Image (cartoon, rainbow, N blue to C red; front, side, top):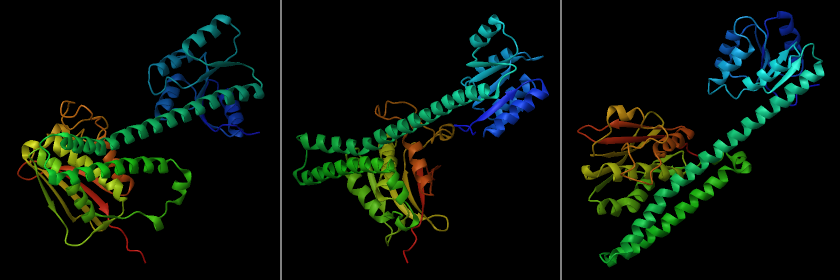
Length: 369
């Protein structure tokens, strides 16, 4: 017989013979087992690596089972560990006290192996199922955050172009450009949604290999950024300087993904660096085998104490929501993770002479034989 659910169990008993018997039984049935002869040792083991279940003798010298449960309940990362207590007593008051303390079940000594294994299997199964559901919920929430964040930039471009078209001051020669911006932004939004749906497909994940690695041209990306954001920057009295590489440089990343990250850097400059009146985009050599896309401005830069939190989730560059009430503070955190997932790097550094500089470094695409 083997355990239906793999899991790690901490057995706590001050009697060495009991530890040996219970541990041997659990090991034979496929569980990982740790042992502790007293409460403090058990607590230290839980803090090092939380078990999926604690089998606990309630009556021990020093820190007894009640004391250990109390300590577990005071620690957020440990308070949800299920505790099944072992007791030789049939005292009703003791059983009620144990359940009030937080135990989920009990086994009376001497126990039958079948009873102990049945109770362990039931509570391990519940614990592991709950953990899986929490992981799925977290992954779904992260995906929702990602989709919401990434749709914000193309939708903002749609609103910008629409507002200009509806205004009386729109120059006739720019109407076609704004209509094209609306169309391209809508295409980008649908492209993001399509890509996220593909990411959830097991068949898509199975297809990923070195032979179908996506490639992206940095020159092409700069041209797209210039076309998309040139007039938006101009409307905010900011000058866009684009330093194109002489030849096309290809890096190992999907073009839509790189545009998604680069858009985040441009939109941050629009929000936080308007006083600098300038945004420069360029391409340069990075470490051996890498190329860099650089976005730098002449704005106020980022203070040293803010730089420590710059790539943490839900931290805004400006420290408040006034500059952008739609901002979630997820942009740079997600951008760094996206770039890291393709083997690249994203970091910030102060610009010489004042201002901010963000650098996206990506591996050069390998030539196809």
